[in-house]
Length: 181
Image 1 (cartoon, rainbow, N blue to C red):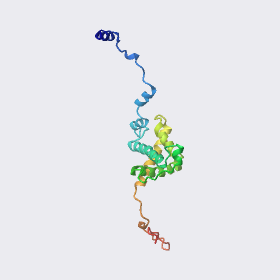
Image 2: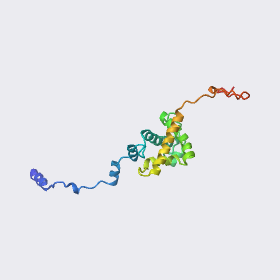
Image 3: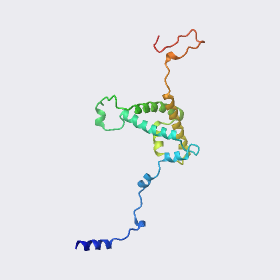
Image 4: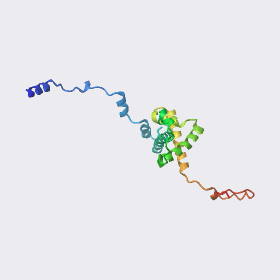
């Protein structure tokens, strides 16, 4: 009897018509599309896009924004947590997060002075850039190039004050040294 039911069920099945299937949702289609930064990277710098160093800078900017917001405790707006004193954790940030945070604060100052743009505006631009808008792409390129410049400047070793050679024209002036003498 059970076999008869199985046979009947097999006969009742119809072949699947591929045209009758449910279409993909917009969210699924968005997941299948490449990220706009990947499109700009494929264009290259000469084609109105970005290069690999700028893509790395964009990733570092997003990571730095995450490190800064976590370091300042801006990730939660729970009032109970804000009322309680936060325990000091000396090793809460990794070395990379500290380095990116230092670059972030120097870059944020330069970004505002040179372009009049807030740093989180650049983070939003990275996340939601439209690759066919040349104005926004050029602003993003300038911000990424500024990040690379600030990163390079901060990676340079700092000279001690005492290693600066005195100017022979300044005979009557005192020469500053690192020891304060």
